[in-house]
Image (cartoon, rainbow, N blue to C red; front, side):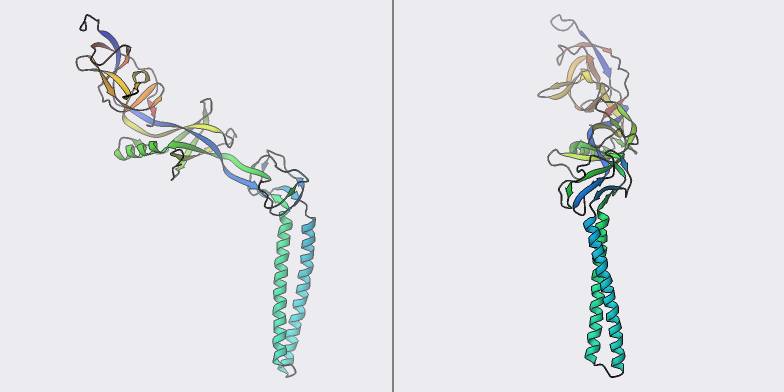
Length: 360
């Protein structure tokens, strides 16, 4: 009996023992295409044909749009004629320069005439080079009248139709091609958690995971069959959210992951070989003290312990500070308990659940 004739309350307790725990973080993120190409015209004109079906898989170099080539063909024809004229002019200037040289050697022509002939030949060579450059540019513009796929991938909605007038400086693209057989997932992690993990690894409290496996979860919480691979962590923190971006590469052969989808990812950062976990219901949150648990102290009396907690997984709460191995934590019979009350502890069975907890 307690003082005052009150019966001793029976409480269910668990005795803490260190156990290996996988440190798992569940982070939000969005899918991003590995390669994105926006189709933009490099010449202006009227779109005469669209050569693909929206949503198709296209190959690199495949024709997609045909811009009216009439003007460009005419410019090519004009440049070809100009080039031929320049070539003929160079041939004539070369002959004149050679004839003047022979006359000069016989003493019939003056040095001034020889110099003028050489200059005329040089100017003709320059005119031919200019004409050939113009011809190459016009042929390139004619080739650009057919818009081709710069990469292989899936093409989306066409933003122009036949008859539309397009120009190289248009603000919107004709269409977008994306490679989605593999996708990136950009995850967001608080910078404070990243710092905690670095310190834990440096102190030896955590053993880092070598491969960092990543499991993606759908909006319904169902895991996808494919496993992702963490590529890198961004080196800058978003000043508006104080978060770091982690980029994960995920195979996507069945196209279940579409660019822009919201997903969650579960990453195993490391293992704590001597972690302490308690059932979730044992942790109480006090506005002034923060997270607390009740323990059975020496003499079977109740004591309050302020603790630091990690996240909850499968109903188990990771305790990072405030408890030690051997502590008897009260799990059942918490109602109406207060510090200093005498209790009668009885063992409480842990639920069957894997010993894993998210990273603190």
